[in-house]
Length: 405
Image (cartoon, rainbow, N blue to C red; front, side, top):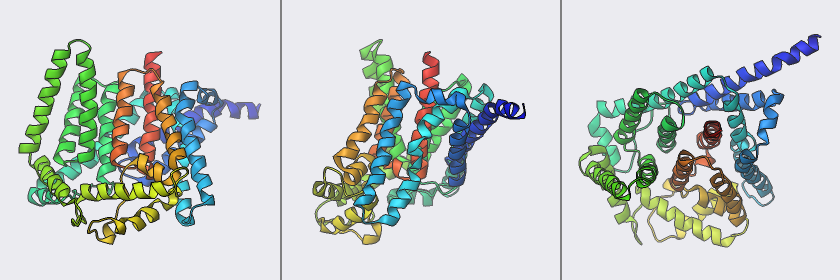
């Protein structure tokens, strides 16, 4: 009898564990690696502890999204046989452990959460992301001369809490898309949108701005164009004019534009690109292409990417101080170099499977946004990025699936 009573409590305990895990990830992404780790662990334990969740894990559409990441993790593991940097291999395996479970765990956890837990998780996510952005924006407003000078020289104002500006920009886009994917009151939605827009533009977060502008243009063009193509062209034209005016007259974006022009001007044979953010990325892509050609089928081993690319950089025709070497900031290139065409093909299976999910325009925009982000940063190589992508995709998939049914 006692044993039976114990097992009756397991589903309820599992639900609280999953809810707490979801809350910690939502609130920790912008602030704390420790909260992320604990939250991801609780999601896994909460799903495993509740048999009711097990059946949901096998849903066909969910498996199409999940299995490619299991395949990528297996390829990471197999790369041990030919990697030269065994220490980094262990680091990679630890960071990418969520590939084995996080996407489906997030999806089934959201499916089973009570409405109150869902609302609290949304509040925690918006609150944590906006608090970091608004506090950092406060630093800019407190010393605008210093901030604009940083932007003018391809640097960024350090984010409060220590998160990378690129990863933070990615979270802002998740928050903006979430305003339409998840239930929000109209006033709340547009107030939060205004705050996100203020942070993104005020800090001139280039990667996030490009990804969100292009995603928004696609969504707006599709929505308006279905009713009137002429109106769609007019709206997109007005949007492009607005971007041009912002770049020309809004100081943070104007400073970033001037920096971009100087970056591109220095990217030439013999050019000094040490402090040219975009120039260094382009040169790193050149080096990565050379490395890829040496082992195109299975790559050099994902843990050896940095060593291989950095060894190639001195052979390029640019002046570049060694301490400023970087990787190419592109997830697809990372897989092509580290795991070759095999790894790139496995990653492509996720996108093919995701596009087979008929979940409407918001799902397509979610995929487009992340596809664009991954062109500007290898998000899946860091804890914040891989958690935001896998957890967020499971979260969005579950919400849109429930809304459709």
